[in-house]
Length: 77
Image 1 (cartoon, rainbow, N blue to C red):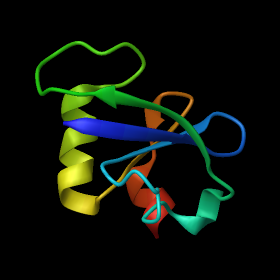
Image 2 (cartoon, rainbow, N blue to C red):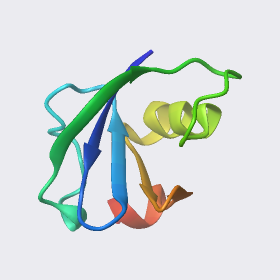
Image 3 (cartoon, rainbow, N blue to C red):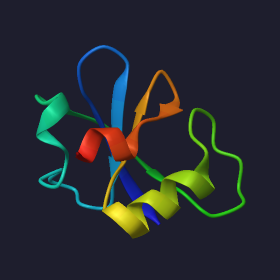
């Protein structure tokens, strides 16, 4: 799956399938485009747990991290 990565404040990053990032949580805005990568389940990807990321995107539409630690549920509240 092609995943678009956006950078928030500090070490906050968001991953989404939406190129525009329109579904990113406002809690950590403003977001800036960082890069686009290809993620596959069970495949090692530096800097992100691909399985966790893809699962969050499927469930919530977005995966959010702070210094590589998952904070998705807190970010979307």
